[in-house]
Image (cartoon, rainbow, N blue to C red; front, side, top):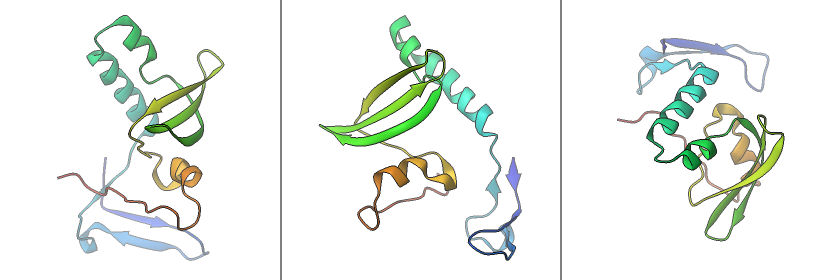
Length: 122
């Protein structure tokens, strides 16, 4: 859903308003995160080429920890469907948690890490 302006309170009691008209990137978006996550999960499952891939693709669960591993990253997830904690390995790590930056906060300590925010894909 397109968003032409926002009003928010961050780090103070003052309301801060932002309007798309004054933003060089244009309007923003409101995202139904649960619907987006489920849609993404369904699309990944649709392109998996085997039953094993389909069962292991994008499990539902809660992000627990992340750490640098050999050749990439190790992400630990508490899976809600099976009540099991599993480690997943990947060469790439994407923090798609929005302003919460859940992954970045666990990976970056102080100024040891530079974060890049993708605001618009053209």
